[in-house]
Length: 228
Image (cartoon, rainbow, N blue to C red):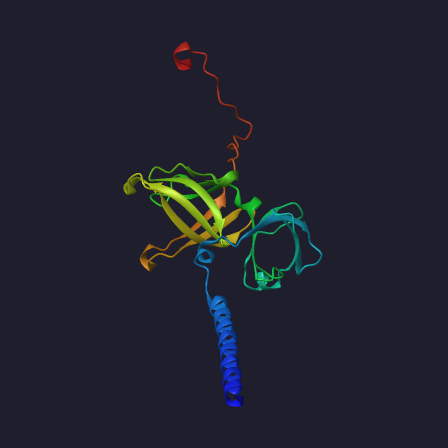
């Protein structure tokens, strides 16, 4: 009888240990599991600069209503402070998991506007891209490509477009922003073969001043034929 009781207790202990181990292994498996959706989720945090406590800190009022105090030392040392900012500017920020350190800060206000460069074909005209609020992008004096939309996705600039030689299908490209200031925008393609990579260097479009005629005025023609 004592042997039977001992055997029963031993079996129970083994079962408990087995269940406990199974639970532990299950927890380990769940912890190691990577959410597939997490790989395509945008982790960019959007909001307004609500304060600059020091040269190494930034306060961000997020679109969700949270206020984050972020250390920007790392972003500065890695040249990922893209555009100077001040209180009230709209920012797109990448952070560590704890949301205490900013790894990239993009001033969205500076990104908006008309950006042009000399035409790569002959340099005679200026061509470029118009980046508008609401994720709308437009081409400037370009006949071979039509820009459609833009957004910041995980700290990268994503632009969709339609190329003249590419049919009617939209093409999506991703870019690393290398420099952003009040008058300069430089970004480089990523995720493409090396021979298809390109770095685009824009300046902000500004209305050209009228030529200085040194006080001379153009003569107004009174001839009816010249008015036609």
